[in-house]
Image 1 (cartoon, rainbow, N blue to C red):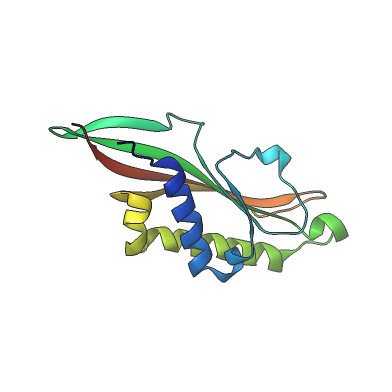
Image 2 (tube, rainbow, N blue to C red; image 1 turned 120 degrees about the horizontal axis):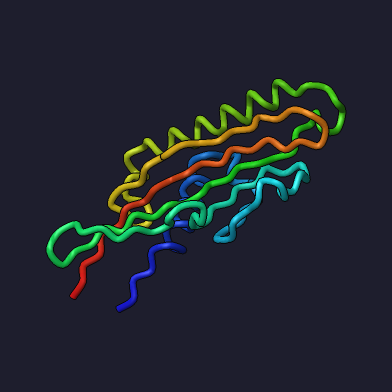
Length: 156
């Protein structure tokens, strides 16, 4: 029997975030494929991307109990949108504040009890976030979030 962990977790994570955060329910979604910060589309839409991390050891298999292994996965969650100041050259403090508040609401979701076992995981952990809230001509505001998910698999 094959056990798939990666794509079901990504799908469950996106579905959960879109269900509880109204602003993400209308975001353009990008699944599975990494996004480069240098190549983000500043098209005026809010974007949400989730992929299996390639920046570190993305999967570790660790002993959990006899016949069971814990698989630790790392995922990247990326939110981004164009800054209006990139168009009119006027600081968009309101836009930056709204974006930072959205990032904090996303973080709150990772602290919610229902997320701890999302997508078949035994534990989901918010590991950290890199944020650029905007500034300068042609800029894009983004938040790159690192998440860990632990899965337990039995071996026959």
